[in-house]
Length: 156
Image (cartoon, rainbow, N blue to C red; front, side, top):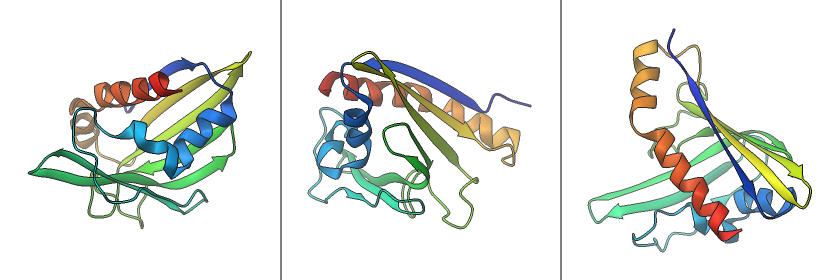
């Protein structure tokens, strides 16, 4: 059996409620965009309810444009978010009928005095064959998530 997950932890200089909103309020999700790349005109869509979706258009270059986001599986305001990561016809490709077919993300928000310890865990389900799980985790996803959440740390 291969490793199927990784976790990244950061301390943010803001209370959990502020950090939680940065993940769930479309007006605050600009940190998720890739730096030094065009910001698309498409609005960020967020329905922060279990079964609701988050969709965000990403532009790497003119030839590489995709939608990412997720389908929320669990929401505990100011404490925890769990979502299947991806988008229908996006990247990663997300099958709304099989949310365990791709990666899932759990974000926890723990108060530490006036700050927040945020832990982001990306997991590939046990039902996914080992070679596919290894392929996912070898794509630089850990580094990409690390860079992404560092941008959140910078803006909070």
